[in-house]
Image (cartoon, rainbow, N blue to C red):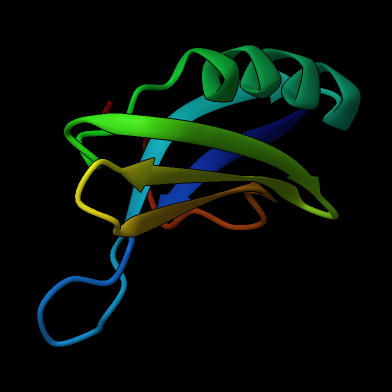
Length: 94
């Protein structure tokens, strides 16, 4: 049985570098992971924009893209991707 991870790439902040965050894991088939993660992404409420005037969710080849437009005019893209765990050096600690 495969282990799948939902990774979120945060929008670039000062210094324009990206942070990836492990959001969730699922054991099962790819289809089961997509189904579970789709619900997670649908319910996700990002910290930015603080006062969203518009939110959009796109399906991509390997996950989703959520873009929030703030009341001050800025856009905040969050990329969610599904990855299969291929190798792990030790026991699971979470």
